[in-house]
Length: 230
Image: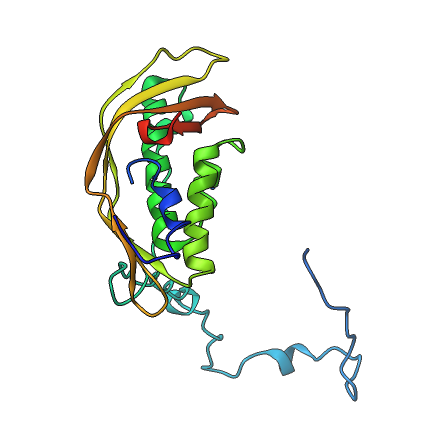
């Protein structure tokens, strides 16, 4: 990994994995000022011969305006951070107490980490993680540091899971997901567009994630990698 002296001490910490959701109404105003309480006669209210009743509004008048399209996402590059980047979609399997659900939780966590990496927004990752997840806390701290203190940004693709194996799913117990992680290449830029560091582009073997089915949803309890010393 290439680093700028003194500025990537915190940046390197995130690379633990291989470098690491009243009605209101008016009062009756009464008769108009200057008006009369006498009701008009039928002759006064009848339309003239040949006159037709007022037309009812047509469908065109009742049609609502089309919603404005969502802003176009702009990927991160050496020119600047990602813009209008969409949040990852939560997979339906994450709500099922099955092996597929446990694996979906890990996949979604990685999507949420990429979203955090590209935007500095930790909300999806936190919603997919236990409050006691130490690995998650390191990731959040690091990326928020780059986007906050450094006013910088990341350029990266999504890391992917390979050869995943899920341990038995048992109610009341956490579940282990054992896998190899293909870590995406990334670069870190400061506010001036200078490269602070780069890394990734490698496979980290024997990674272990602990997930648990809590309140009808899988969450990540923590992640352990060989390089983390766990």
